[in-house]
Image (cartoon, rainbow, N blue to C red; front, side, top):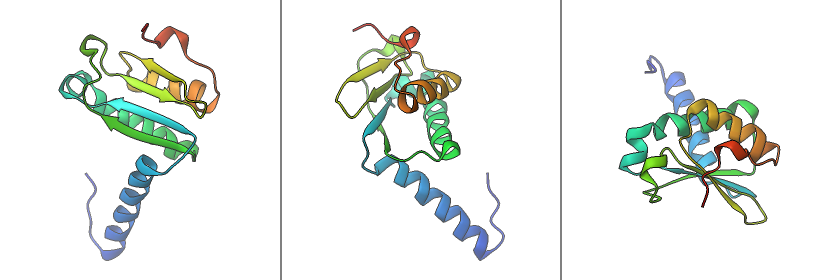
Length: 122
């Protein structure tokens, strides 16, 4: 929890929050969708989402939209992350830990290579 002791602290926290919000809504060529239904949240989807947003911030990525959705319908495979690239292909990853989320961001979203060992067979 951030302690706010001055107006400058409040402005800094506000700017950080706005930047994170922008990452979730900015139009781009790639989209990352995190299943945040009840099952996903119980399985750790919040931590997975945080890892994705932190990776984007740390690597200063642009052109990536991060959104969340409700139940995807594969509760036993939660947390679920879907990656949609500019050409429209949708890849679904299952049981994604925060560490695996960073790997997906690095190899698939940034590098363009699907992480086949984490893909959910459809």
